[in-house]
Length: 463
Image 1 (tube, rainbow, N blue to C red):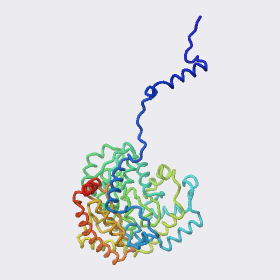
Image 2: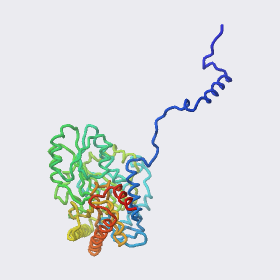
Image 3: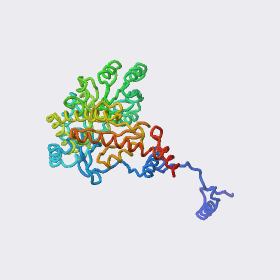
Image 4: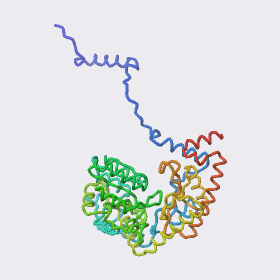
């Protein structure tokens, strides 16, 4: 009986012949349809706008104002490209970066503990200075305890994402920091936004929606980093109590700045800090170090220390950073004149700018004073012109702020002098007038041209 071989019964010669015939088939028959995968980085969202901004700057001869290297310690004065400038681009509000006690504390911490704790604190990274620092931070907010993270951004992201979930909601100010938004999105909770400092809108939203969620977190900033204004803390506390919510206040820019002794917005408002459930702050601004923290009830802190991925799976704060922060807190409490000087300087700059006819937006005269210029191109041009005249201030443009909201953001410190503040306002007013004429001569309409593509269209039309 004759049997027929199946493909699995082919001998070596037959298998080789079959493979040869397959290789001789037309190329289109060998092609298997596959999806087209995008592996290019220049197709990422926003890259076209970045490229357009760069091209516009190059066409106008404007250098990139970002990533400017400072050639030494950046305080009220700094050195950029060999030039000494009055510096308004650092968060060293109390002038403690470089304070002898702060430097010495960082050096001594390195001598004793090395440059790193080398591990998560749960594993092998716990050191006595961690708990000492956390106790001091808790004391600033009259809280039961605190937990320190190696990053302020990470402190917000990991804490928010850990405390709420899919059955919950976050209600936050429209101008809240990116770290809160990222944490809320990672949590899976509903994210609801109310107009900046519009607590009437927040109240309406809570009245209509609170019953839809298990837990609700309300988040605001103590001092808004782009606008320099503060929320109504008393009313926020009343709303959180009425609607059964947690209240979280991001004091990254408020601690060391607000209140008679620099203890933040609760001190400024004359309220019991316990009305706020979650205090957040950073070590990189008033405290001349690096890192972030959460302060609140013992239960809250205990939970975060075993549940927040940004703490559990991250190395502990470095010795030098902890030592510097501890010394900076002590210096703030011991040298109260620093807080007073900062607040006096901020009021002086704010009032001088307004008297010169400059727009300060919604700022209230604290350490952050934006000068609103509207157009992004104008903001970038002004930054370069001011640097050439010895004033370093950075532009804030879209997408960091909405279109038509570009500004120069001035950070005032205790170390600035009245003369430096007055000189900055004088030069700024002159350069706004000069830059307006320059852009008008090129055909730019500062009331309309804020999109980089609009600016490029004007340039192309002129060439």
